[in-house]
Structures are given as structure tokens and as C-alpha cells.
Amino acid sequence: MSLAYFFDFATVSTSSVTGWCVILSLLASAVAGAGYQIFLIERAKKCLDFSVTLYIIHIFICIVYGGWPSTITWWVVNGTGVAAMALLGEYLCIRRELREIPITRYQSISKRL
Image (cartoon, rainbow, N blue to C red; front, top):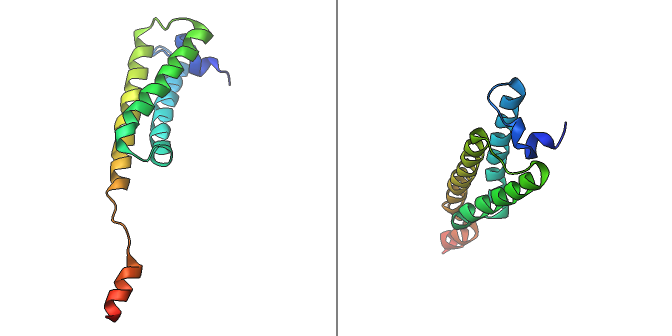
């Protein structure tokens, strides 16, 4: 394992098995990030901002680690990742926001009356 798999743009390629594994791991981390947004962000309005901010930080780390990403594959994978994280995060947060609030305590009082 090496940080190069996540921060070096040259490892993201479709010409090798390792490159496909890196692509799948970057997309899986986007899905995991969307899952964390339920607990960290909790609001659907803020999911896009959080996702874009996280990927901008990732781009800066990639530039420091391996230089400016010059492959189209890297840009497509990261664009897909930010879109997947934002959309899935918003979907999950909206589902959580729309859950009914249980008010069983008040229902038991009204049954007594």
C-alpha cells in the first residue's frame, strides 16, 4: 500500500488492473463519504458544499504530491466521485429528514383522556 494510489494521478488509468482497482477504490470512497454525510452534515442543503470542498482539498493534496493532474481519466473519475458523493449524500440526508418523528409519549396521554 502506498499513498501514490490515492494522490498520484498517474496511477488512475484504464490500461492496467491496478489502475482499475484505484478507480474502484476512489469511487467506493465517494460512496462511503456519502454515508458519512448522514452523520456529519445531516442537512441535504449542505451536502454539495461538503463534497466539493472535500474534493478541492483532494486536488490540492494531489498537486503537492504528484503535480498537476494531466490525464482525462483522473478528471473523469474525480468528477464522477464528487457527483456521486453529492447526489447520494443528498438523497440519504433527505430520506433521514423526511422520517416521521415518533411521539409515542403524547399518544399514550391522549388515549387516557
